[in-house]
Figure 1 (tube, helix red, strand yellow):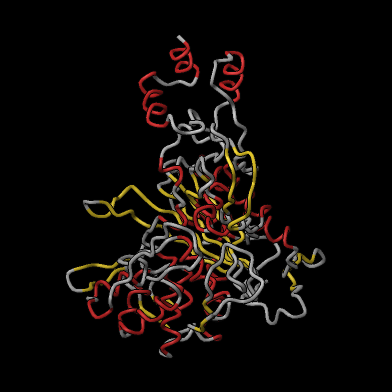
Figure 2 (cartoon, one colour):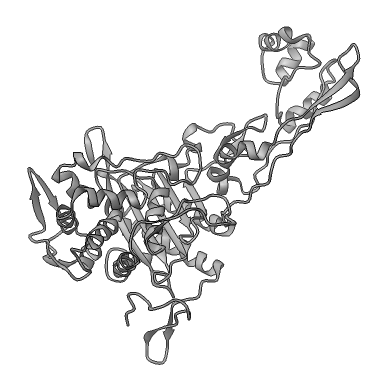
Length: 487
């Protein structure tokens, strides 16, 4: 009777109890249930079953819940890391067990400590680079946008381009690490590092950077994009409409696939590949989080003309959100590529110059025009020059590219003159209303970066002069010339 009652109280069967206990009768005790619920504990205490006791254990508790779930991850019942930081830094956080020589009585109970054989080592504290204030705002805005657009999923990454530190990393759907009973594996996915996608038009600034590095183009070099399409072998590359003649800046502002493709086809494959790879495509972001997918950047020796043409506007290669954030951090940091870090840095990590200062600044200046005049107007942040690029990507399926399934993207930075924040927003399959990156992802960027700039105390670059209704610059003394300044 006691056996049946015990099985019922801990929600199991007598056969399961037999399997747990009978092979372990030589042990001091056997765990029947780990991390039992409060209700179960109360019922067991009331039952007062002979031989059944309760043992208090510590367990991880995550105060921020789902806001930091994918960043922190979680531990199992024995406090071993299973996801996120908990897994990546498990050895650091857990410490090491020690050993003692003891004397036990005939019942196996310890009655005397004889000597310490090996001292235990406590786990070490770990300080993250995450700014919890910015993390919360990014989570709030991403969650609201995914719900508003009835999207499948979303990610947002915010980086300090001058150090490589990740200030925010959020995904949707998320989960509560304190209550994981009914969750599926997809909730645990840290999409910002595990999910790869074709970056679409967000790669065009990198294509332009390659052109500038080659010395064959300047910001005002003219390219004919008429009549709005052109043939590459048997394939056709097209724009939304005939943009006619565009300068290189206009290729970005109008987001011309034809213009980007013509530029790429005029460059050697090795040069284009070296710039793509240099900004971090096809290699790890080095952020150190588990499960990172490094995407795909094929060998340039195998590129056909159509592959070079489509890579120029973001098809035929794949990246994750973290890699895209690092690529834009290269532009923000005047051409320096740094490893990304999820932990707070006390010293600089090794870095590498992959673009000239002139190229990085020129591309940033062009990208301010995307926000003031082009597809990225919704990414504007009051008081700051924003540099960024939209992207709207047809999703790849087993039958080719879907006509009605999209990724909406925005990647950008502020202040554009000397950026201190870089952010990437990815919305997967928005189904309600708009699907363009400039309408779906760019507003998320604007809302989050407005708050982040305020939190970090970034000095505004632009103030409204109410006396003449014109914008005047209020650049910081050390900020240099303000790029893309306009009345």
